[in-house]
Image (cartoon, rainbow, N blue to C red; front, side, top):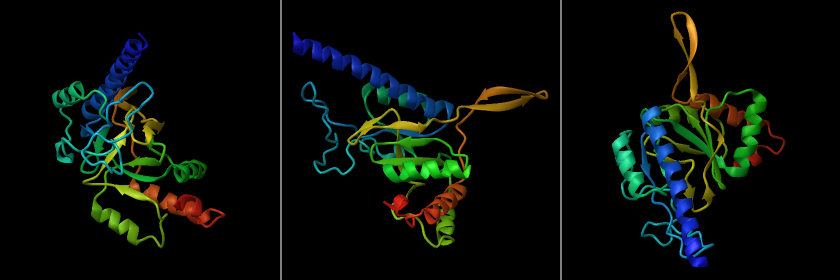
Length: 239
């Protein structure tokens, strides 16, 4: 009886989690026009209390369990609602991956502890931030799309950048909430601003819009300034 009840609880959890992931993927793809695809995901739980943290891909030594494309590959990312529904109907617990770059958002990420400190410092500086994705190990600040050429110019203009800062641009990807990956749950530390304002006949009204995203140059400059002004010489943002 306990085993049956356990299976029922796992089924209910899976349905709720799957519905949430499908809803999130559809919102990204159709409302925001962000291309998405399902991630590799985690192995099925073997028993009650076993979360099955290993990656579902064939690599037993996978460094990022669940948090990467596998089948389909990254080039399959789409904004087509029918494809998104088919994917998450067949794989309801698959992580939601955003294919970054092109017309889609890009991101800058830091280790979780450094990311939390950086976020507090950027708030103190008055910088308007966009959505922030948090995992137990890394925090990612979403920014407006940029090209690799522009990123190169921005980095060349800096004397120094935090050593653990990563860039998710064209040809990259980012795991989005409410996915679950090998390191744990993915969540919004700063939720997307989903409401914009539209002027109709001189009257300002609320209208659905893609989330607002800051320019990568402004965020990079602020991160470097925050690192340089830190009393420990920036090491709190570097590791």
